[in-house]
Amino acid sequence: MRAPVFVGMIVLAHVVQGVVAPYLAIERVKPDLVLLVTLAYGLLYGPGVGGRFGLISGLLQDLLLGRYLGVFGLTRMAAGYLAGVAERRLYRESLLILTATGAGTSIFADLLFMALMSATGYPLDPLTDMGRVVIPVALYNGLLTPLVYRAVQRIRRWERTRTRDGEMVQ
Image 1: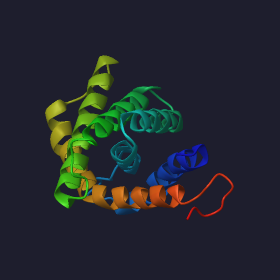
Image 2: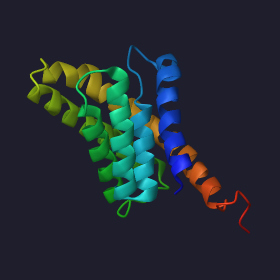
Image 3: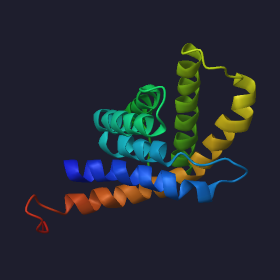
Image 4: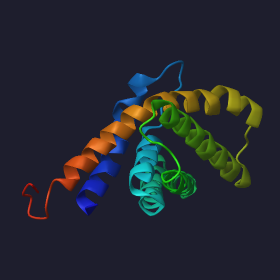
């Protein structure tokens, strides 16, 4: 994997999250596109790359939001790493498995986020947050996971057809 594509995907995920995700909101529930791209990177490249992608994209998210620096970095890193570990055990071509993986990873990341925020003293109501945020977002993320995974998979294929000089590999 080349660094420009890696960095470009991080920037693209944040731009799409900020520009497109608000228009995809259903009853104030928006998909977490940065998490979904992180999941796709973990599933395609393994735990190391998934974890690095999650850490860098999460830290950028922390900087853009301006508070609790490191919380998104840690949650995204853990989610990317977990997806990378699952990569060897899952049949990723199944829509059902991709959907379940996306929903499960979303729940994991949100629960970890809630735990970290709670540890900083942020007031949370876990039962209300589960019903109003975590579960609806997980369902939405799960449904979008196959689409995001396929898009990142296509970018990976394109990247593999290039050499360092920009010429096509035959």
